[in-house]
Length: 165
Image 1 (cartoon, rainbow, N blue to C red):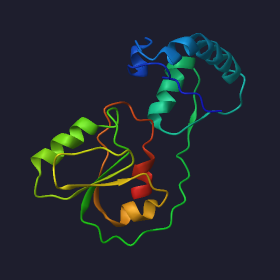
Image 2 (image 1 turned 120 degrees about the vertical axis):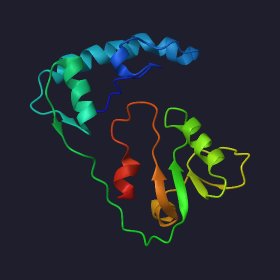
Image 3 (image 1 turned 135 degrees about the vertical axis):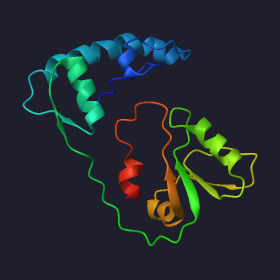
């Protein structure tokens, strides 16, 4: 079962305080979410094995539950793409994924070509191509020379890093 340990939080898990969300739907759901978290924490203490996707999640699992876990990286099946790319690529542009950092890089390197895949984000700069959402990750990586992953949050295990390798 996947249960986000930082759901309904606007801070990193280490700060251990619920976020102050403005979304009414989240405020209504929060008590039910907390109940589910407590049930899950109790159930987890009785399992034989917990798998974490990274050493960071292993540490969070230990810090929150006092339980050790085994690190097993996500299995990613992807056919290798022939790389002829010359783009600096950013996938899944969102604030917590480092969108503001990416925008600064784009602004500071006007001579470079950038590719954004995922959410449609408007850029004032002419050196950014937006691909939008795609199921064809080979297309993204075949155009990529350098992948940027400027996360501003403790990203558990950025899948794009594994895919790009």
